[in-house]
Image 1 (tube, rainbow, N blue to C red):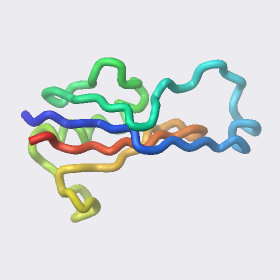
Image 2 (image 1 turned 180 degrees about the horizontal axis):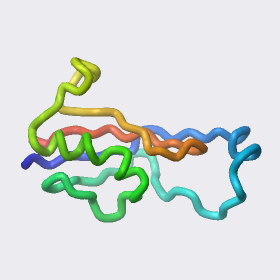
Image 3 (image 1 turned 45 degrees about the vertical axis):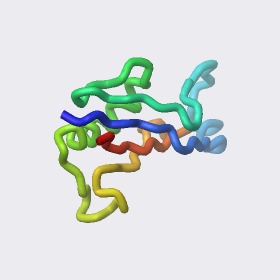
Image 4 (image 1 turned 90 degrees about the vertical axis):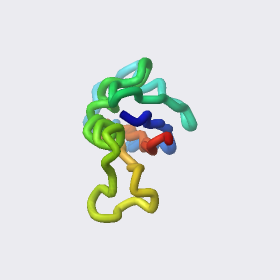
Length: 100
C-alpha cells in the first residue's frame, strides 16, 4: 500500500452560525495550517482528529490502494483529493496526496 500525506490547507469559521446554534465550548480544534500527517497502510495517523479522519478515511484508504481519479477528473492530480472535516462551524480543508 502507498503512503498518503494529509496536509491542513485552510480553516474557516462561521461566527454567525456559532452564535445562533452552538453551545459555547472552550476547545474545538488543534489543527494548524500547514500541519502534516502521513497515513501508513490507509490507517489514521496519530494526532489527527478522529472527526476529521472519518470525513477523509474512504479517500485515504482508496489512495493508499493506488486508486484515485475521484469523480471523473475532479482533481488535477488524480492521486489526490481535497476533503473538509465535518465541523459545520469551523471546517478545515485537507489536501490528501499519494507519496510515491
